[in-house]
Image 1: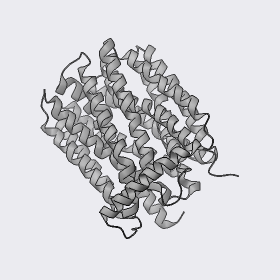
Image 2 (image 1 turned 60 degrees about the vertical axis):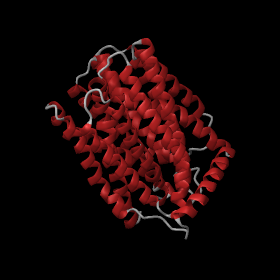
Image 3 (image 1 turned 90 degrees about the vertical axis):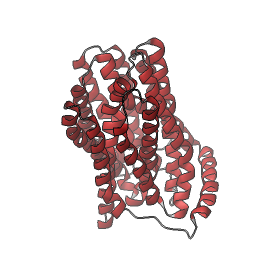
Image 4 (image 1 turned 45 degrees about the horizontal axis):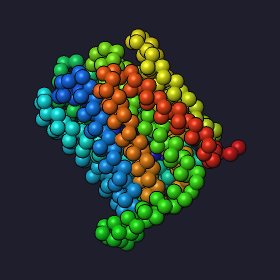
Length: 409
């Protein structure tokens, strides 16, 4: 691997380290419980409903705009500029969380929606750098390294947040995330390439990118195996995203985990996810991403069903470790799987469609979880309903041709 590529790969992975502070503290562990219990202050399931709406609406917006913006990025050579814009949007909205007070449900909903748009929208352009910075035989490993280093970022940010949470300084925790995200994302904006410009203005790129995005959607729909993969990904990623955004709320409301326990639980998940991503990095290239995705979905199906019947905290800790092992693995392998279908020079467009599917998959699950939880007055039927996403996705991915080894010995 060339020296230039190594520098870009390190800076690319550090961006995952940076944005994982948002994923850990804001999206997954601390702020969801704070919003549900303190801002909404309603234990009847209304908090779950509002949190589900925020995640679903933001994901829907990203899903609808990603293919179009991906096309603009490819044709204007402004991929890094789009990544910077979305990063700043997320950082600014996270900083503004310090303004929230009890009862400011709508304001909290709007800030979380905008912050999540910034975070998830930026990933479209972040993912599109993968085929550019790594040759095909390294893409599975580089993808896994990014996720693994991202888990390290989650652990680091939670370790910083823990003393702030214990002392009740929640606003300081939100500001810490904003600073953490900003600082560690800087290498990406310094070392990643801007992308090749094609002599088009932003307006011209918008017209051509929009036309090509529509053409790309039709072309992908016409490719049978790509269509099959994206359908499977749509379903099983819905389950993954839903578990991520509701895991801490489930542990707190259903199993009685306190704030300190929630942070510890999430850190255990991140450590096991980091371990799983590193261990499976080479197998993604040598076994092929399809086999790795299949094994991961078997594990996730077992985890979701087991969560329905577990009442003991100790057993839930063990279950969280199992979930962590499959988390980074399935995400990294899915990204590497899809990268095999992308024609050269169409990375942002194709990853825009990938994001369209991925973010669409985060619309139905959170709404379903919130609806089932509020209807039955319990989160257990809701988590059981989510297990259907993993089982269905597993059955569908088995029928996809492709996803073979990147390295043939």
